[in-house]
Length: 387
Image 1: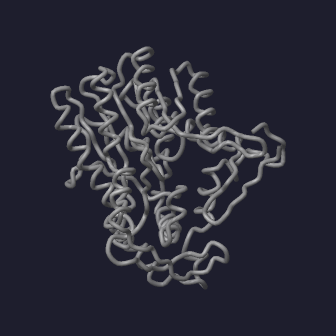
Image 2: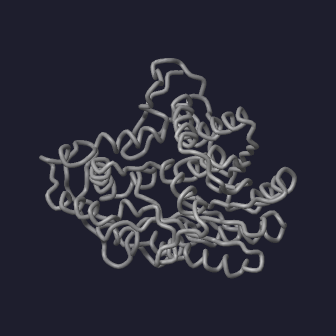
Image 3: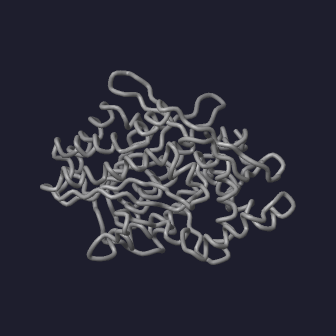
């Protein structure tokens, strides 16, 4: 069938298998060109099919030459409905890794569940013995607990609702967007889903089954952002979850000190994701940020961020590069004073009339469509493809 993007608001309901494969190929090529990284050799990536998780797996395999096990929760194609982009990304990764003679195993299922943890650990024990790096890059809207209870995450403020300038996708106008305030139940649910509890459970299970090596490194990803978006991220429901993530990193490191396992939170740059596209205010910030960082020639996507994280921040020196807040920062270029002051200057004056001049709308949409395998250079989208 000929696959076209079907966009409804901030969601694309189709994915292009050849475009997704091209996207993975591009990230692999960048990683190879960026040079070898002397790092981990057996890597588990939990949440490995899109965004930072996929880029982490590509960097591990094609930058460090590591054997990788990836965990994801993706849907195959059914009838006229395409598979999810993560399904096509993972298939493309597996094929590319096998061609290079790299060990790869992808396990599709709910990473929160005991069943998937058991399957992953059995695979590690059988094929690799132990892993020496665990990347926890899980982003999920809900979590089914062991007793069958379902809890959901929400992206809301704590306290007062938040209103700011907002980009209306339908007509490229600048208006206002409001994010409502969360209930106590919503705050608790977000921490349960997006905090560090499941990360700690994974590390505990790996240690108990002797499936993780001494002095292993484990990473989880976070975002803080500028003061402009603090009510949404840093001080909102997701901020509470990320605070718990940092506390979990400290708890893992302390608990596993005898084994020398160290847990870190990496604060990454703001990028277009399926989650960020849905949040009022954020897409406008992203489009302005993209323009500023591209003009300063310091813009990065997921793969550039993960290559710099692994190469420069974790394995490039004698010690991991930690900032004063106890976390690794690859948002350091985004948060540079000259970048943020320029972004805020633009923010103050941006309006409907000057939006296309002051923001990188095309760059935003390119990243959006690339997530689903569309608008990739070198792909003929008029051709029938097997979905």
